Image (cartoon, rainbow, N blue to C red; front, side, top):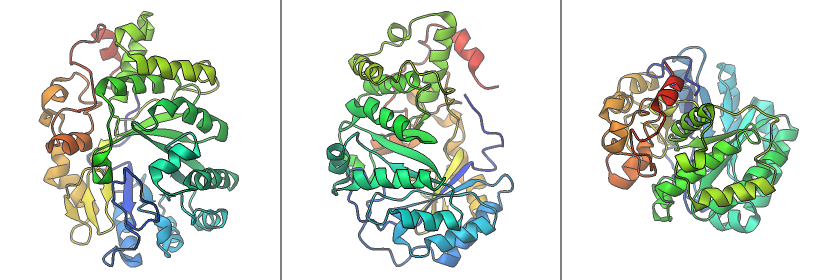
Length: 390
């Protein structure tokens, strides 16, 4: 486990700004329910600059500022916003869509403006799977081309993969592609039923446990992390504790057929025997706890997948909303959790996905629907407890 170096109640590690909801894609899971055109009330260039000044007001080291969408390339002032952010001293990253606007020239313009990192979505190991999910042809090829162009320009690339029914059996192949092409991180995003994603078939909690353990297995081959999969932290601690005891994890953690099939495929692709990188330890960042999302209209949310607003940056400073709003302070209190999450010995380093709890039950403090762990059942609590951050 890695912990945040600074008090997450005072300063987020990451600020995400949804610059627009305009996008040429029509992805099956879209949180933003993206539209073809821009909203007339989006934050203007100057308002975006004011937002970045509010981010700077958190103090040094400044939070990472990520510009997303929709498709951020739909804003013709994107490079100017980046330049202004860099002039303020911010590290600015972008998260564009795999559209015709994702070109080497457009990436070079952003790189010249000061962008050194971006994230791209890859939701299948082949064009048929990815394009079927994104519902527009050629997005797979454009994403791969943009990925390669960004790396040639010297930019750091994070690859995001939605983990859902359509691609779960391709996860080993996607990981192998990430290893082949090279990436700073590979983030497995556990689907949250919000926006268009509310209608997609979800995995079972047991299947998610299998996936998270497979992610742990390939940690020496691929720099893997999770998004809205906070119980990966619990899995990492338990796996480390089992390794210290010399106990086999598959039986101890009651893993199932999906895990075994992913391992077989991963072994064939050479992912299980890799020793060329250090395992990427998960970090305890979650909604309102080191993370904040600002919408295209300026509303402030604990996460882009938790559609409850705590305020608006056009009305109150982001620092005030993040530090003092009742919504954010409540989400930072693990004693507010209920159900299995409230009883769990790992709630202070995990806490479950508040976005998924809200999406499934309407209660953001309810137990994590995609977690199979029963509190208190891990057979070696002392070993796991010794690994918990102090």
